[in-house]
Image (cartoon, rainbow, N blue to C red; front, side, top):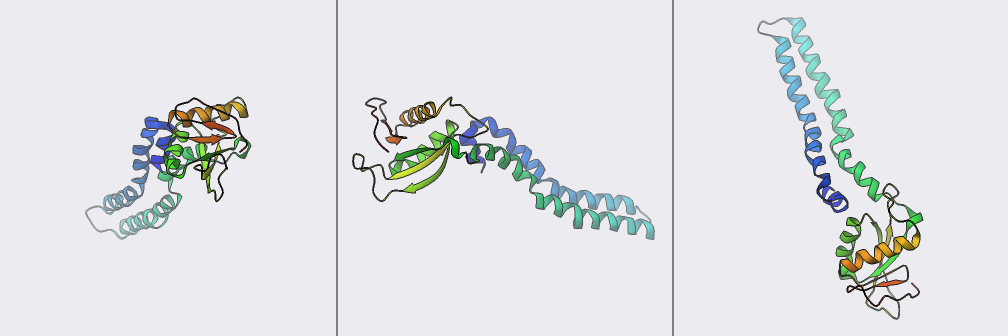
Amino acid sequence: MFGLLREFEGWRCLWRLPIAALVYAIVPLTFLGATVLAAYVAGDDFDLQRAILSAIVVVGATAFLAPRLARRELHRKIITRRLWTFRKPNPATEVHVLLRSPDAETARTALRRAKFNPYVDLSLDTPPDDARDLDLKIAVHEPEAWPQSASDDDRTRRIVATLERAGIKARVGGVDAFPAGDGRRTTDA
């Protein structure tokens, strides 16, 4: 999950990791704090009222507070909420990309670094006649929270440029992307 967020944001998201770890530590620290507080309340001499009060503190922290904090998984939300801003589907910006299956992981990583969301993969049984090696179709979305393209054509050009820089042969919305960056032609996709 953190690795995926790092592909979108780079190392700028690194601060989220120690914060998530601290929030994750809250649950065990709740148990420890309840035990210390109960021992403090109980004191040195035995008093029934203090013993009952310390038991209430321990039961309250361990039976109610800690499980509720654990169920909410606050440590995961620190990363997942940010990741969702990139991964949330945005069908209005969808662009279809045809590429070779071996290039899929490299293409996904390059697209994420360019702030695109490679949303869904579809293996093609019958690739286009003029590009038999392009056997995988990826639906690529531009995140609604991070728009960078002025138009659909601009979005297509940005995706083509991203894949060319990554050295991936592809067809993006009918425009061929070549690793060398030359020889671009428009076809039906």
